[in-house]
Image 1: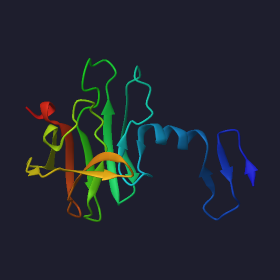
Image 2 (image 1 turned 60 degrees about the vertical axis):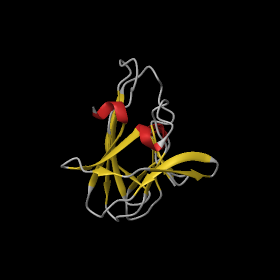
Image 3 (image 1 turned 30 degrees about the vertical axis):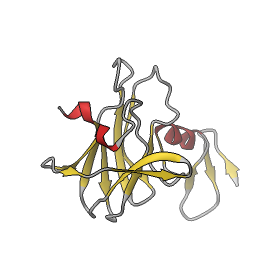
Length: 147
């Protein structure tokens, strides 16, 4: 194994250089899914704005989201999730005031058809889920973001 100064490691495989270290840490600050559900900006510094687009997550999802540190409330705007496999999407609410399924809105894109959201316990955490269809995109938001 050869170490490079740009936080990349060459494992000698035919795939060439593999990401390691710093990039994995940044990705984990933006999106985590190892607990069995999506967590948006779980370790992001509260005073720093940031966004990501097209990040892959377990369950064959592609996720995009934006965090706006300048906003007084609802720093996380609407989140977009694309489903490739059409499986159930589980997620933790990133909005502190959205504690119940009625506080959240999931809409199919385009068109805005509302998708039912249900609460569930996963490993002791209260999270939410909705059914997806393969090839469809969905917007997740706090109810007051969709007025």
